[in-house]
Amino acid sequence: MSGCDAEAEKKAGSKQCPQVQVNEYKENGNSAYTSLRPIHTTTSGKTAEVYLSPFSLSNSKLALFKLSTSPFESNSNNAVAREKTDGKKTCREALTSKMKAVSSKTESLLLKPPVDAEREPRPRSTAESAALCVDMGSSGEDSAPGLDEFSGLSPYERKRLKNIRENANFFASLQLSESAARLRGMIKKRQPPESKRKRPKKKENEIGCRRSMRLLKVDPSGVSLPEAPTQPTLEEEENPLLPPGPLEMIPENQDDSNELFKASLKTWAEMSKTNNERTAERLSSIKSYKANLSDMVISEATVRKVTRGAITSVALHPSEVRTLVAAGAKSGQIGLWDLTRQCEDGVYAFYPHSQPVSCLYFSPANPAHLLSLSYDGTLRCGDFSSAVFEEVYRNEGSSPSSFDFLAEDASTLLVGHWDGHLSLVDRRTPGTSYEKFFNSSLGKIRTVHVHPVSRQYFITAGLRDVHIYDVRCLNLRGSQPLISLAEHSKSIASAYFSPVTGNRVVTTCADCKLRVFDSSSISTQIPLLTTIRHNTITGRWLTRFQAVWDPKQEDCFIVGSMAHPRRVEILHETGKSVRSLLGECLVSVCSLNVMHPTRYVLAGGNSSGRLHVFMRQESF
Image (cartoon, rainbow, N blue to C red):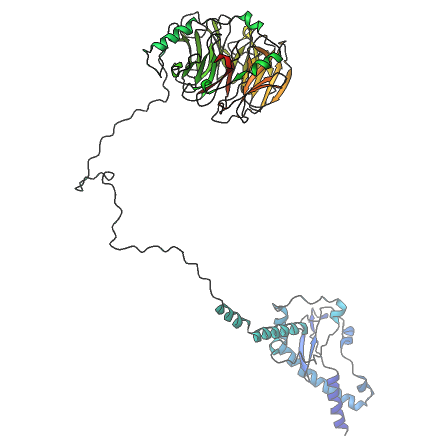
């Protein structure tokens, strides 16, 4: 019985305390070290894992890590203890042989950790690594089927692999790929919409369109025609320059042998000019001036087409007996209309220029002379007594824009050019050249006007500035102005002194403003008196507005209007409206207007070549 009991106790002791072998090796023969590699052994169906950490121990301390005997064995007799010790030695020898076989496989698994591992195991301290950690692995996870090949992994890694395998089996059981394939087959692809218009099918033997044999350069028999020699075509200029020298005053719209025209020339040559003293006496108050303007009307008899194309300049003969209006056109034509003769023969058209006529004046010394300035670089004088357009000035290199009489006897002229130059022309000297050629401070000159009293001063309207010069201080290289009016923000169309005293200056600007300045004292600065809001945007096809003074009234000026119904405005220097001249026969915009120096007659020209004349009813 004692032998059987010893064997039973031996088996029980082996189940309760698994045997663990510690790999010991000596280095330099002095210290013992333990391996980092865990040793897996199987004893009675249990798996033991031992984690070892390298450290040095003496022989006395190494004995502390040997497993002690159980309390059951200490209470047994000496005989059973000896038998049990022999059994442990036998079991230890068996485990040692098995652990050596498994150690190589376990070492490879530990040195190469699994790819699916999410994190490395927590590092252990020296005390924990020195302790023997034995995992009995009695749970069902270690004994689960299919995990024998991962027997060298930790329990956490085994559980993770098991979850991955179970999830994969679950999704495979759902058969999602087969369901997706069935759904793709159920969805029908959208067919592109068919074109509404069906193209006709092309017939095989269809006859093509007929083509002109002349364009194909083939005769009716099918033989190709020889190519015709090309003749060079000479391109004619739209407005060729007229030859220099005098031109005969021959009307384009009538026969040159017309006796009626010759009689008109004789009548115009005999008309006397206005007396300046009588003009000064006619200056009246604003009240009587308004009353006289109220009598001015327009009728069908006072509207006539005079020129071909837009009117660019207008002038009124100063005669008190007859009403003679001259108009310069964009085409270079000059039209004369004698309203005293109520017939079609009263209109005469001439071509003394080849480009627009920008300025037109009757001579203050001899009203039988009509002076005209054109963009073609010529200034001509139409003499009614000799029926000739004489050439006064010619400069094809610099296009002139405006001129005025520098002397009261009209013997000296001041000409402004588009490039900013000024020319001094003396009609008494032979030839058609200038006397002096000055360079102003402006890049462009639109209008030139001489002071009516102090004739050494003149005013010029440039691109954005208005300058007042002294003719005595002009320089050939560059002239500095006495006064510069820089209140304008856009392009300036004109600037004129008041006609009698020259104490006011009126300017027309594209910023929809008319400005009146006080020029009674020409010093370093001229104050601005009034700014009047007025629509000056005429567009591309209408001639620009120019505000001009009434020669009979020092403080009133005339300007065209874009308002409906169409009208001509007469404004006071304070900005108040004096009179609006309108009527049923005025259906277009009169851009340029001029008033008779002594009579209440106003002539306005539009952009289609028509003249509109307002006058008193007793004047018809």
